[in-house]
Image 1 (cartoon, rainbow, N blue to C red):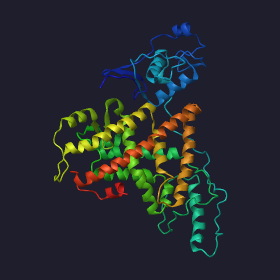
Image 2 (cartoon, rainbow, N blue to C red):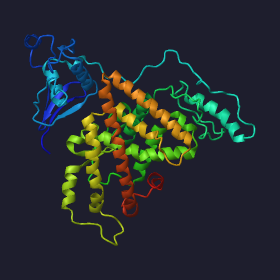
Image 3 (cartoon, rainbow, N blue to C red):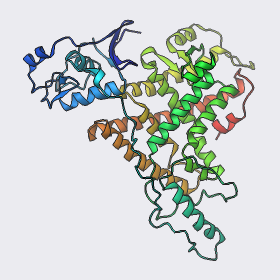
Image 4 (tube, one colour):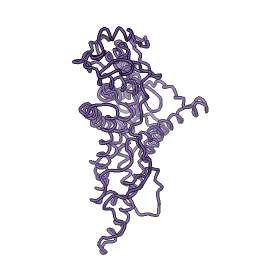
Amino acid sequence: MTSTHIVGVDADGLVYYAYGGEKVKLKCLVSQQDMEAEFGSDSCWVCSSPANGIHFKAVSCAACNAFFRRSIASKRVYLCRKDGDCAINKNVRCLCRACRLKKCVFVGMDARVVQPQRGALHEPDSSPKQVVPKGIKIENKCSPNSDDLSIRSDTESVLSHRLFSDKSSVYEADLNKPSVSSELCSSPSCSSQVSFKIIDAGLTAYKKLLDRRRIIYTTTSLADMMSGVEPEFRKHGSADHHRLECAQIRTWVANAMEFFGSFYFLNELDVKDRCAMFKAFLVNFINLEKYYLTYKKGGAVQNRIYCQDYIYIDLNELIEATNGEKKAFKQGDKVMDSATTNKINLPDCIKAMELLVRPMHELQMDDTEFICCAVSMMFDSTLIGVNPAIKSLGSKIRNQLYQEWFQYYDSMGFKHEEAAMRMGNALLIAPTLIEFVNHIKQNFHLMRVFGAGDEYDKVLNDIFLD
């Protein structure tokens, strides 16, 4: 690949510049006195816009201040599409974020004084309290002619109280209670907002998922498992990254199921409805996370796909190897050879890199935005074949999610227009992902019949077959 100019923030929160395999730390090139003599204190030293004060030890405008703070706090990595020396002024300051960040450092902005990024919305109430939503009644006022409606009234009251109260701890199911999918949030008087923070719940669940996965795949020592050491990624020589291996599938399903179950009120649903929601969510979530992980690990620059089981696929090497392989699957063969497997799956890998990973990289998506996309797909109000109450629940959750999402952008210093643009670009990834996953399901049938994997796991039928 052609060498690329990269400007990013390392694990220590310091800005670096990388090109052609070399990587150097950036530092201020001029003194504060020289900058004041040239630009004064009325103009931003980065883009020459009107300044509003000294930020991070340099005179800057509000926009450059917010850009620098977000870049450092989120440890972002930017690519320059040109020669690494783009002009930065008030008219074109947003065209190249790599050169803009580099100039921020050159004029004296100090990354060491930027505070670490805070959680999305971690503002717990000082005095926890439970509030029963207005209009929810405990007593039964339904017609005595309907036993079903009689059960519905009492059960719905309890459920709505649980769902729309401040309690967000793990739900402990009572197996003696009747199934209540049809009652959940179907009351017109039910509150339009859940009172726990959806983004916080998702971020907490995802952190647990990552730690559980790290422990499972750490094979070096107990000390590494307990001290948080990340396993190294290993190269995988095939495009068949959807292998039908029992252990891998079980791990992926278990992790996703634990994430799904962290939204405690879902345990109130009937098993059939829970399965329908989880089945629609599972493959989308696994693939969304894989390509988000790919972006986070630098796969957009390296042309590699990073998978959840700590393996990576080098697409450059695989393309070259596949083009040189002459052996192909022939009629009568009982097992699909590696060349045919690669030819089937490699186009999907390349397409995913272009349509999923690179948009994430262009957006510089962070964990909060990833969680918002995942939760938005989880609570899909367009699911077919589920109780209408589930769709109502999905709509309520998504509405609150979007409100919290805007609040997060506001806390990060984004203007409303920029926040709306980022949210729109993030949500546009979902339709592309769903179309991509549908194609993967088609390939699954070939792999199921002819694939040379381990013992076939029948759970795959539930996952992939409609």
